[in-house]
Image (cartoon, rainbow over all chains, first blue to last red; front, side):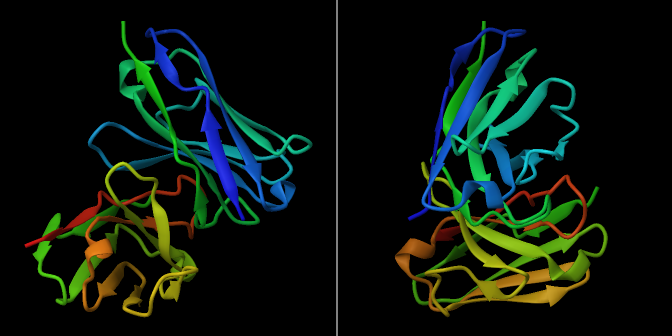
Length: 120
Length: 109
């Protein structure tokens, strides 16, 4: 069955960096776009970024553009999110989610999330 | 960017009743590419509906979706205990950002 498992969350000071990973199994990882979605404590869902199936294309929300970088290693079935210049408002649970065949698509499988806390 | 507005913010209903959730877009959602997700406390979201009216795997036929253009509806008939949660709509018809609505909480009355 399809499984997505995030890791790499933790407590980090403002201005520092963190890299999240999302390991995938149970489906042909290289055939699907992948997304990161976050949720601040007690708030709604916020789409963060998407990467195409082959890694050649991506898009970011305005709130993270220039600070976050999405990447993937299809040989390892792993998705990454490099987060630099972190701010307190980046705090929340980060989910990876499987998208469609292109950058646009609904998210049919989600990981359980990893908590990122940005605080001094 | 397309902004999605969900209403009401909270629905207080009893098991067995029906729920009608609304999602309004600031501009037309291309090809009806509108999805709904359910999120229970402490859990990841789960896809409920996609393409406006297609139920996701494992979702019972008590759930139905409708709408077009800028107005979309998720209807849940005969509410069961597992249906009480927060529901989010999302559009994926235009280029990213793939925006979410603010959510509707369906709570037990």
